[in-house]
Image (cartoon, rainbow, N blue to C red; front, top):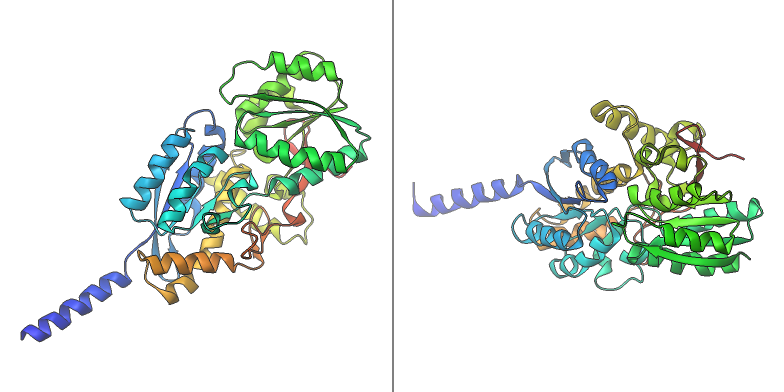
Length: 382
């Protein structure tokens, strides 16, 4: 065989191998540490994501950040530089997501984040244009909580949240919306995710005598101030953010969290949704698949957020493949553009309509009011 034919054969084989290269998706989740209650279902859900899209094999690389933003940064550097991923899913916490933004933007790698705070996508800028969010924005949830408070005759509210970007952003969102709704904020307290007691903060809340208390926290640490309020005899209404949208919150809190009010994604009460709701079959499909693999009652909103990230990628990858090959900067850019163009993508947690200004794309269809009643989350119709 001539040298020219050998070169041609080599180029042909090289092109064929490139066409068969896996699409690599990096996943960062807090499967250990104080936020593991949130991170474990996110990690577990990866096993339910599609392994082939558009005829291309999908490879997932899952790393644990141990609930530590510093570890999250180490992980994202490794996924980008060593594994050369085409997209990222995660992390579990807002502080970790904020810490990753520079590296995501510098490498121009699309990130589908599963954190609560809208601070990771707003205000939109050159860094955040690479970030998409599969959880409801705080203002969408806060508006539903305030509607419920007003309907219940609540006039005064006490606030306690994490002393980190999650709690601070929630306060910045909730306080002006509460004032606009005619509610008076009579106390504002903070605590750390690793604190073992919030007695001092609880006593200050009680002394302000609010009609209701909003706790802005995630995972098992969200139980701490609520248990303290119940212990001290508080009889007002207690609201939580969608950071506790998991059955583990009820398992850990027990009787102390009975009666908790929350606005969150519809997946957690999928069986209670109206038959014509387009989210219902997707949500129930996720619940069935997750519980078949991990056991009854194990599903959570946080895993569903990862599942929805997979659904968005499932829609965005085929058009991106038409533009470029996986593993290239051009493919990552095409994937980012396709995600930004997502329209009416029905997930387990809502329906997504992205745009250059809105990298969340969820509306009122992505939230319902629910209550802990009889040891489980129940759709609140009254």
